[in-house]
Amino acid sequence: MGIKGLSKFLKTYIPTSISEKKISELASKYIAVDANYFMYKYTISSNDYINKFKKQYEHLVSNNIKAFYVFDGKPPKEKKKVIEKRKEVNRKKNIDVSVDKIKELKTFFNSLDIEYIDCESEADFICCKLCENGIIHGCISDDMDFLTLGCNKLYRDYYQHSDYIMEYDREEILKHFNKEQFIDICIFLGCDYCERVHDFVNRAIDINVYELFKTHETLENVWKYLRDNDMFLFVDDEKEQLIQEKWPKTREILNNDIIISPNLINLINNISIEKYSKYLENRAKVYKPPSINIKEIFGDPTKKREYHQLENKRFIKTNNFSYFHKKSNSDNWDKKNYKEHNKTNQYETLNRFDALVKSN
Image (cartoon, rainbow, N blue to C red):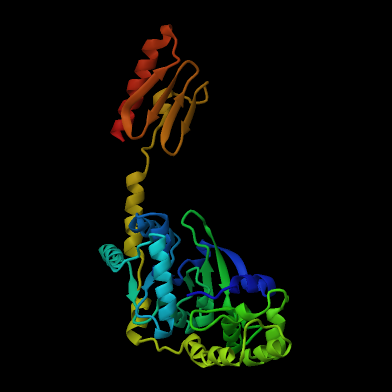
């Protein structure tokens, strides 16, 4: 679920609610990760979604973030049509986020003791209530409805290769509107539980949504103002009644009054990343390249000799010859550019270096 145009609304009218943060600033904080959103995202880009989740968790843990994943449960019945429509779109795009894949991911999490929560309802509601109650610091997802449902700190545009993330601050939004007004704005912009009011507005008319709700406060008053000033298209009395009768239930859903169980709170408070951190340390040791004492091989390296160590290769260059060595095959040496009279010295150097690499 998302709120159509909410990101643009905030960038235009409340830009102070959005800021770029270093992901390291989330260190030691409890962060909920929207598992279903990233499952969908990683399945689109690749079938290797397990490895992508593994790299994501490694990235979060390496920054000392107490992250845990949250899986969707049963959605509200009011969302049935939207879900069926999305499934049809996914079938056309050949996107398969099946129950079996979700189970496979959970099995993988269990194998590494990665914490996750199975929700009875949608993950959004649980994550946001945890955040609103101060049990966790924030949530990682790109769905803007998290802000509507009570998430105080929403982190979007997460990428494993980046050390930065965009923070959306709900508390900054509530300095401009109260909670009820903000929910009404989200209904106006468009959610999954009723028709999007903004779609009925004449596109030839430029409206300022921020000023509309500052002036008229409620969704009913905004609707009346637009109707009285002939700003709507294709709205008759019958259509108006059908639209407005869904608003009370939509408000009730978005108000997110679910109750968090004490068992869930205890589970989150006991989350520990030490075990996985040790795994990362051991993994780093496996990939740590052998240390080479250049002076032991060549003597003083400043005498017309240079040593270059790159990420996936080692390159040794002297004034008379050069060798290219791949880490994946320590015995495969390419010998070139040497002078005939210097052959003996070169092979002696090669043998001494090769023996040192093997010993490490």
